[in-house]
Image (cartoon, rainbow, N blue to C red):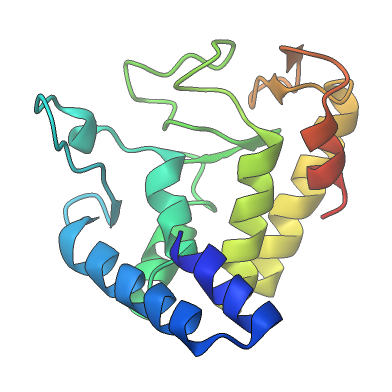
Length: 174
């Protein structure tokens, strides 16, 4: 949300949207950062639960809206790490060692083209063009290998879900 407001302010020149972007980013940095994981976490509002203990790619992609560069870069470093989110055919949604990791499942495991796209945007926002290029290239190869799938197994590149999927085209334009 923070990043969307920032982009909107750049397109429209609306300073209120720019301020909203930074206010949301500050709140996110204050309320959702988890030092122990080095990423952003869910904050259960209703019903509690332990979703805030699950390290997800969403927690890394929050770097896109962060206003604290050191936190954003700490998140993005996890995209390089094969023990965390880096896989041969894209970015895992969960680290491979997590017991909930299912690389062929619809949720909690596979690589998604739109998340690859957002990871590239986050890297570029924080000046890590080398990592952005690496993720983009791996994503492009995976999109082709998967047959332009909705999502794919990040370990094998095997396509899953609907084929062809239009958002794979968006990510391929990385």
